[in-house]
Length: 244
Image (tube, rainbow, N blue to C red; front, side):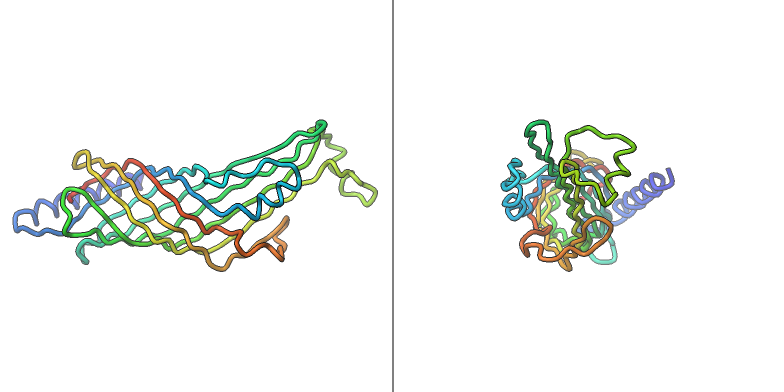
Protein backbone atom coordinates (compact mmCIF):
# COMPACT_ATOMS: atom_id res chain seq x y z
CA UNK A 1 0.00 0.00 0.00
CA UNK A 2 2.86 2.40 0.80
CA UNK A 3 4.44 1.69 -2.60
CA UNK A 4 1.13 2.33 -4.34
CA UNK A 5 0.68 5.60 -2.44
CA UNK A 6 4.22 6.67 -3.38
CA UNK A 7 3.60 5.86 -7.03
CA UNK A 8 0.45 7.97 -7.26
CA UNK A 9 2.18 10.73 -5.31
CA UNK A 10 4.86 10.79 -8.00
CA UNK A 11 2.18 10.78 -10.69
CA UNK A 12 0.49 13.82 -9.12
CA UNK A 13 3.81 15.66 -9.02
CA UNK A 14 4.39 14.81 -12.69
CA UNK A 15 0.95 16.14 -13.64
CA UNK A 16 1.55 19.35 -11.71
CA UNK A 17 4.95 19.85 -13.32
CA UNK A 18 3.44 19.08 -16.73
CA UNK A 19 0.76 21.73 -16.32
CA UNK A 20 3.30 24.26 -15.06
CA UNK A 21 5.72 23.88 -17.95
CA UNK A 22 3.05 23.47 -20.60
CA UNK A 23 2.25 27.15 -20.09
CA UNK A 24 5.84 28.19 -20.89
CA UNK A 25 6.26 25.85 -23.80
CA UNK A 26 8.77 23.37 -22.33
CA UNK A 27 8.96 20.47 -24.83
CA UNK A 28 10.73 17.76 -22.78
CA UNK A 29 8.95 14.46 -22.42
CA UNK A 30 7.99 13.51 -18.87
CA UNK A 31 5.87 11.15 -16.83
CA UNK A 32 6.01 7.93 -14.83
CA UNK A 33 4.51 4.47 -15.33
CA UNK A 34 4.43 0.86 -14.23
CA UNK A 35 3.23 -2.14 -16.18
CA UNK A 36 3.10 -5.80 -17.07
CA UNK A 37 5.51 -6.80 -19.84
CA UNK A 38 5.39 -10.44 -20.97
CA UNK A 39 8.11 -11.30 -23.46
CA UNK A 40 9.46 -13.95 -25.78
CA UNK A 41 13.12 -14.68 -25.09
CA UNK A 42 15.46 -16.75 -27.27
CA UNK A 43 18.54 -18.12 -25.47
CA UNK A 44 21.04 -20.50 -27.04
CA UNK A 45 20.05 -24.04 -25.98
CA UNK A 46 21.97 -25.96 -28.67
CA UNK A 47 24.62 -27.33 -26.24
CA UNK A 48 21.83 -28.53 -23.91
CA UNK A 49 19.86 -30.18 -26.70
CA UNK A 50 22.92 -32.14 -27.84
CA UNK A 51 23.03 -33.79 -24.41
CA UNK A 52 19.26 -34.29 -24.17
CA UNK A 53 19.31 -36.08 -27.49
CA UNK A 54 21.65 -38.67 -26.00
CA UNK A 55 19.04 -39.30 -23.28
CA UNK A 56 16.19 -39.57 -25.81
CA UNK A 57 14.55 -36.47 -24.30
CA UNK A 58 12.78 -34.05 -26.63
CA UNK A 59 14.79 -30.92 -27.36
CA UNK A 60 14.11 -27.62 -25.62
CA UNK A 61 12.51 -25.36 -28.23
CA UNK A 62 15.25 -23.45 -30.04
CA UNK A 63 12.85 -20.68 -31.07
CA UNK A 64 12.52 -19.46 -27.47
CA UNK A 65 10.15 -19.46 -24.55
CA UNK A 66 7.56 -17.22 -22.92
CA UNK A 67 8.59 -15.21 -19.87
CA UNK A 68 6.44 -13.12 -17.57
CA UNK A 69 7.68 -9.78 -16.29
CA UNK A 70 7.04 -6.23 -15.30
CA UNK A 71 8.71 -2.87 -15.02
CA UNK A 72 8.37 0.83 -14.52
CA UNK A 73 10.12 4.16 -14.99
CA UNK A 74 10.11 7.83 -14.13
CA UNK A 75 11.63 10.76 -16.00
CA UNK A 76 14.48 12.37 -14.06
CA UNK A 77 13.37 15.90 -15.06
CA UNK A 78 16.87 17.23 -14.32
CA UNK A 79 18.06 15.80 -17.64
CA UNK A 80 15.62 16.33 -20.48
CA UNK A 81 14.09 13.17 -21.97
CA UNK A 82 16.08 10.80 -19.74
CA UNK A 83 14.24 8.27 -17.62
CA UNK A 84 15.29 5.69 -15.05
CA UNK A 85 13.42 2.53 -14.14
CA UNK A 86 13.58 -1.14 -13.39
CA UNK A 87 12.38 -4.46 -14.76
CA UNK A 88 12.31 -8.18 -14.07
CA UNK A 89 11.26 -11.39 -15.79
CA UNK A 90 11.12 -15.16 -15.31
CA UNK A 91 10.06 -18.13 -17.41
CA UNK A 92 10.55 -21.87 -17.78
CA UNK A 93 9.95 -24.82 -20.06
CA UNK A 94 10.08 -28.60 -19.60
CA UNK A 95 10.59 -31.73 -21.70
CA UNK A 96 10.38 -35.37 -20.66
CA UNK A 97 10.25 -38.92 -21.96
CA UNK A 98 8.77 -42.11 -20.50
CA UNK A 99 10.56 -45.37 -21.25
CA UNK A 100 9.14 -48.49 -19.59
CA UNK A 101 7.70 -46.44 -16.74
CA UNK A 102 10.93 -44.56 -16.04
CA UNK A 103 10.57 -40.82 -16.64
CA UNK A 104 13.58 -38.78 -17.69
CA UNK A 105 12.89 -35.05 -17.52
CA UNK A 106 14.67 -31.73 -18.10
CA UNK A 107 13.36 -28.42 -16.70
CA UNK A 108 14.96 -25.26 -18.08
CA UNK A 109 14.34 -21.80 -16.60
CA UNK A 110 15.77 -18.32 -17.10
CA UNK A 111 15.24 -15.14 -15.10
CA UNK A 112 16.70 -11.69 -14.70
CA UNK A 113 16.19 -8.08 -13.76
CA UNK A 114 17.91 -4.78 -13.31
CA UNK A 115 17.95 -1.00 -13.54
CA UNK A 116 17.13 0.65 -16.85
CA UNK A 117 18.33 3.96 -18.28
CA UNK A 118 16.63 5.23 -21.43
CA UNK A 119 16.69 8.33 -23.59
CA UNK A 120 13.40 9.21 -25.28
CA UNK A 121 13.91 10.72 -28.73
CA UNK A 122 12.77 14.36 -28.37
CA UNK A 123 11.93 15.00 -32.04
CA UNK A 124 9.13 12.39 -32.12
CA UNK A 125 5.82 13.54 -30.68
CA UNK A 126 2.68 11.70 -29.52
CA UNK A 127 4.55 8.42 -28.87
CA UNK A 128 7.65 7.64 -26.86
CA UNK A 129 10.54 5.95 -28.66
CA UNK A 130 13.31 5.25 -26.17
CA UNK A 131 16.76 3.74 -26.58
CA UNK A 132 18.82 2.66 -23.63
CA UNK A 133 20.13 -0.26 -21.64
CA UNK A 134 19.42 -2.46 -18.63
CA UNK A 135 22.16 -3.13 -16.08
CA UNK A 136 21.41 -6.11 -13.88
CA UNK A 137 21.83 -9.79 -13.17
CA UNK A 138 20.10 -13.07 -13.89
CA UNK A 139 20.31 -16.82 -13.84
CA UNK A 140 19.76 -19.97 -15.86
CA UNK A 141 18.71 -23.12 -14.03
CA UNK A 142 18.56 -26.67 -15.30
CA UNK A 143 16.93 -29.50 -13.33
CA UNK A 144 17.39 -33.08 -14.52
CA UNK A 145 15.35 -36.00 -13.17
CA UNK A 146 15.17 -39.74 -13.76
CA UNK A 147 12.76 -41.85 -11.69
CA UNK A 148 9.87 -44.29 -11.88
CA UNK A 149 7.57 -42.19 -9.67
CA UNK A 150 7.59 -44.65 -6.77
CA UNK A 151 8.91 -42.95 -3.63
CA UNK A 152 8.93 -44.00 0.01
CA UNK A 153 10.06 -42.06 3.09
CA UNK A 154 12.42 -44.81 4.19
CA UNK A 155 13.92 -45.24 0.73
CA UNK A 156 14.88 -41.57 0.62
CA UNK A 157 17.41 -42.17 3.38
CA UNK A 158 18.44 -45.57 2.09
CA UNK A 159 19.45 -43.97 -1.21
CA UNK A 160 22.24 -42.13 0.65
CA UNK A 161 23.85 -45.33 1.91
CA UNK A 162 26.94 -46.78 0.26
CA UNK A 163 24.98 -49.92 -0.66
CA UNK A 164 22.39 -48.03 -2.70
CA UNK A 165 22.62 -48.56 -6.45
CA UNK A 166 19.29 -47.02 -7.47
CA UNK A 167 20.09 -45.90 -11.02
CA UNK A 168 16.40 -45.17 -11.66
CA UNK A 169 16.33 -42.34 -9.11
CA UNK A 170 18.69 -39.60 -10.23
CA UNK A 171 18.41 -35.81 -10.00
CA UNK A 172 20.73 -32.93 -10.83
CA UNK A 173 20.35 -29.20 -10.29
CA UNK A 174 22.62 -26.99 -12.40
CA UNK A 175 22.56 -23.19 -12.19
CA UNK A 176 24.34 -20.31 -13.84
CA UNK A 177 24.45 -16.83 -12.26
CA UNK A 178 25.57 -13.84 -14.29
CA UNK A 179 25.59 -10.07 -14.68
CA UNK A 180 23.90 -8.47 -17.67
CA UNK A 181 24.15 -5.53 -20.01
CA UNK A 182 21.13 -5.30 -22.29
CA UNK A 183 20.75 -2.67 -25.05
CA UNK A 184 17.05 -1.98 -25.63
CA UNK A 185 14.58 -0.05 -27.73
CA UNK A 186 10.98 0.55 -26.60
CA UNK A 187 7.90 2.11 -28.18
CA UNK A 188 5.26 3.49 -25.80
CA UNK A 189 2.00 4.31 -27.56
CA UNK A 190 -0.51 6.08 -25.28
CA UNK A 191 -4.18 5.16 -25.36
CA UNK A 192 -4.88 8.08 -23.02
CA UNK A 193 -2.81 10.29 -20.71
CA UNK A 194 -2.92 7.45 -18.17
CA UNK A 195 -2.41 4.22 -20.14
CA UNK A 196 -0.15 3.08 -22.95
CA UNK A 197 0.79 0.04 -25.02
CA UNK A 198 4.45 -0.96 -25.00
CA UNK A 199 6.35 -2.82 -27.72
CA UNK A 200 10.08 -3.32 -27.46
CA UNK A 201 13.06 -5.61 -27.59
CA UNK A 202 16.73 -6.00 -26.87
CA UNK A 203 19.70 -8.31 -26.57
CA UNK A 204 20.90 -9.60 -23.20
CA UNK A 205 24.69 -9.87 -22.92
CA UNK A 206 25.99 -11.81 -19.92
CA UNK A 207 29.25 -11.59 -17.98
CA UNK A 208 31.01 -13.67 -15.31
CA UNK A 209 29.02 -16.81 -15.96
CA UNK A 210 29.59 -19.03 -12.93
CA UNK A 211 28.10 -22.53 -13.12
CA UNK A 212 27.20 -24.46 -9.97
CA UNK A 213 25.80 -27.93 -9.34
CA UNK A 214 23.91 -29.42 -6.41
CA UNK A 215 24.97 -27.78 -3.15
CA UNK A 216 26.81 -24.77 -4.61
CA UNK A 217 29.69 -26.81 -5.99
CA UNK A 218 31.54 -25.46 -9.02
CA UNK A 219 30.72 -27.11 -12.33
CA UNK A 220 33.61 -27.23 -14.80
CA UNK A 221 33.87 -27.67 -18.57
CA UNK A 222 30.44 -26.21 -19.38
CA UNK A 223 30.29 -25.29 -23.10
CA UNK A 224 31.17 -21.62 -23.48
CA UNK A 225 28.13 -20.87 -25.63
CA UNK A 226 25.67 -22.27 -23.09
CA UNK A 227 24.78 -19.15 -21.11
CA UNK A 228 22.11 -16.49 -20.68
CA UNK A 229 22.93 -14.50 -23.82
CA UNK A 230 19.62 -14.01 -25.61
CA UNK A 231 17.50 -11.61 -27.60
CA UNK A 232 13.89 -10.87 -26.76
CA UNK A 233 10.76 -9.02 -27.81
CA UNK A 234 8.15 -7.77 -25.37
CA UNK A 235 4.71 -6.22 -25.36
CA UNK A 236 2.58 -4.99 -22.51
CA UNK A 237 0.35 -2.41 -20.91
CA UNK A 238 1.60 0.48 -18.78
CA UNK A 239 -0.40 2.77 -16.52
CA UNK A 240 0.75 6.12 -15.21
CA UNK A 241 1.04 9.55 -16.74
CA UNK A 242 2.29 10.10 -20.28
CA UNK A 243 3.21 13.39 -21.92
CA UNK A 244 4.83 12.69 -25.26
